[in-house]
Image 1 (cartoon, helix red, strand yellow):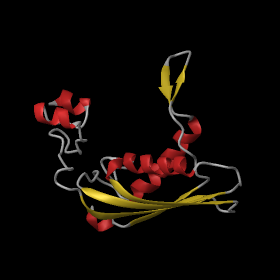
Image 2 (cartoon, helix red, strand yellow):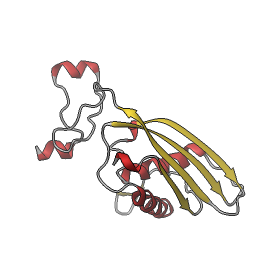
Image 3 (cartoon, one colour):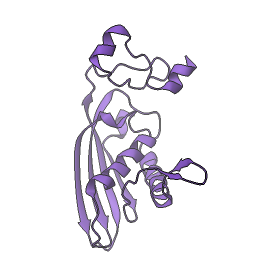
Length: 165
């Protein structure tokens, strides 16, 4: 997958800010708001088209995003960024968004062609101390508290992988 980087993608349409999952009181189930879910599906399609395959779990990345919105409505740039980074994680560009170590973002309002321009580059490899890999799927095992490391080091990235082993 190294030969596809850097990736440059233009995602058409008005960028949508990240919104937390909500609970539907009548059913007690969590759901993502429809507008955000639909936008993430579009972003996912464009990102996957540039980088098909398995997620990279050993590299560190830089991402630069430029957001163009059609209106002048106030919006939080950090929530726009979160939507794109989550979409890139779902598109299997990286295993975990903690692998993003450089980040840049700009927001332009009142543009006649709403879109997001995304550029993703590999900038190095994870430090071996940071790149402990899951015994089941090969994903990055997140750090744990120092007090836990000595007694029982983590071997899996999730409860799902633990259950498979």
